[in-house]
Image (cartoon, rainbow, N blue to C red):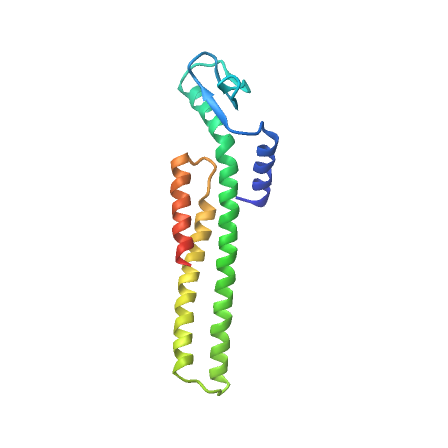
Amino acid sequence: MTDDDIKAARALCEAATPGAWAFMDEAYPWVAGAVDEDIAGPSTVVEFNECGEQAHADARFIAAARTLLPAALKALAEARRDVDHTRDGFRQSHDEVIRLMRDADDGREFDRRNVAEIDRLSADLAVTKAALVEAMAMLEDVSFDYSPSDWALWMRDLRALKAKV
């Protein structure tokens, strides 16, 4: 998802009627809109005068998207921050390994502690690199077509990835 896509999605969220939305299908036409506590349901924002499963699904999607899209944008921003943080850690570990190797090549004292430190940093580097690759793949696969359960799984996987680093 490009930065322009994210800006467009945020603009849509900011322009829409704020607050939680609901879907009512007890009567016809079906309505989806912002919750109005004075009338115990949505104030009419969108009416669906067409019958059928597709119109019903569209109305439910519109009501759910008002809450899910901002949450998805927030999760995406957090995921991008985590990727940046992981990338920074990868670079720092890589730089430290290079520094230690240069110290060894320069004929400076190279004892077992340096070897152990290089091994530890190399292992950290491998874990960080794997987590970065996995996080980048997750970001490439993000879709606003996810259902709430898909978002829950995506967030669970992202939290598990974050715990690895």
